[in-house]
Every structure is written in structure tokens, then in C-alpha cells.
Image (cartoon, one colour):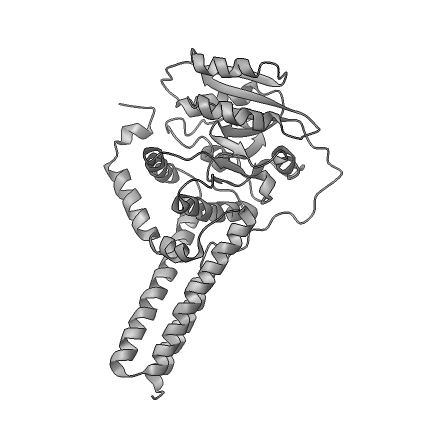
Length: 379
């Protein structure tokens, strides 16, 4: 066993890369919320716009959770569905006794605007309150304090509020891990500068700004992204509030394999057409590069140390590998605690290492997809 300059240099490089890879990690970076609440501001009445999107069964299951919200200032629920949908009409008839329930309908055909965006636009315009929270029918509030915790983030300087959204616990852990990781990027961007996009539903915004800003004008041609384009268009620097409280979350029903695949492909398409994408992509690529380079260098150092008899370098590589895995698990689990997620600790390293293949597969599927499926302007 000996220490030479090569051993010292290799050990320092491995140590520095280990530190860099742990820090260049969305789960390591903090997501700050407002430390104090302005108790002098009166909480506003809210409108919850629910996009049915032909998911009547989920709507029937989740409407009671919305109506049972404990929110003193009051709220209304606007359900948007397709005209002539008898199943939807039957569900709405069950809740007709709720005086704060309203419904509006879209035509069966929409030529120049996707159905989700048309549904959102009509639902927002039908709202009687300025502050609107938009959901899909597949979303379930985490508790009866959902509206309260969202509204507590609203003040005179806020025009957007983002809450956490992920799948329910019965969904495959890997899909929940992907959504959790995305949320770490998007919520941090909103908290530390300007909002970029979200992981799905659970956003609050001002109806007046949506209407005065011509709604989806500028991205009407895109079929998907009804939530992302609102955030991306109307976000202003340091005007977006985020809430990390467990009660402010919503949970989505389990998607089918086909629905999950379509979501990933559509997510990739929408990301190509959002403003401020360069910085977000740079952050994502940097984090991934440091993680993979760190693992490659550690393994290469270990092999080199064994072949050349540099046992101290081998020990340093082994310790760095253990530290890398342990710390990355720790930071993911810490975020899981914040968002009330449950992920197996030992699965986390494999989930992270698979990100490259997940991204490659998604990009290949997007390349092979018919681009007309993403546009309402089919020429």
C-alpha cells in the first residue's frame, strides 16, 4: 500500500465529483415558501373549475371531496363537460342540491382549439369569482382543508398559486418518483424566480388576468398543456406563491399504461413550446451529467486502483460510492416526507440511474409520434 501523486489526484477528483453530484440534485435544493402570512388580508371566495374530460366515474367519486371543503369565505364549483353526455348529466343531477354547483358544456367538435383548452376557457369565463382553481376530474383533494391552504398563499402581490400534484399511492412508485422529481424543479423555479410549468392540476390564478390576457392566445394550436401554458404565460417574477402543506395537495387516479405513455410524450411536446425552457433544461442536464459522471469515475477509479494496487484510492472510491448512494437516498426521502410520498429507499438509486433511459425512450416515442396529434391545425 502506498500513496503517490496519482493516488492523491485521483482521490481528490473523486471526492470533489461526489460532492458536486450530491449538490447538483433537485432533491438537495431547497424549495422556500413564504415564512410569514399576512393575516390582515381577507381570504377571497374561490371558484373550482373541474374539467370532466369524459371521466364521469372519477368526477362522481371526487365531487363529494370538493363539496366537503371547509372554507369559510365560500366557493363554487363549475364542472365543464361535453354537450349531450348523458352520464355526465346523471352525475350532476345527483349533486343538484348543492347551490354552489354550476355546469357549462363544450360542443362535441372543436375545430381550432383542443377540448381541454376550450373546457378550461369556458369554465374560467363562467366563474363568478376572480380567483380560480382548476382541476381534472381525476384529481382528489388531500383533505377538507385543501381550499383553505391554497387560499392562505394568496396576497396582493400574488397572481398564481401552485400546489403539489402527484398520483395516488396505488400507482407504480416509479411514476410517482418521476412526478416528484419534476415537482422539485418546477416548484423551486416558481419559489426562487418565475414559474415555468407544473406537474399537472392544482393551480390557482386570477380570472381577470386570464381574460384580459386573451387566455390561451399564442398557443391555441397545441392540443395539450392547458395548465402549463397558463403558468408559463401569466407568471411574473416573484409573483407566484407555492404551498408545500400536505393539505394543499391533490392526488390523481392511477393512469393506464397507455395514458401514462401519452402523458410523457405530450409532456415532451409541450416543453418544446414553453418560454424560459433553456434554463430549466440546462439545470436538468447538469444534474444528470454530474450524477452519471460521478458513478462512472468512481467505478473507473475502483477498477484502476485494483489493477495498479492503489488500495487507498480503492478505499476512497468505495467510501464515495457509499456516500453518494446514502446521501442521494437521504435527500429523496427528505422530499418524500415534505410531500407525504412513500418510496422504497433501496429503489431510489435504480430509479435515478434509469432516468437517462426513460428520457431516451420518451424522446424516441415523441420522434415516432404523428405530430398532427399535438396540433389542432391539421393541414
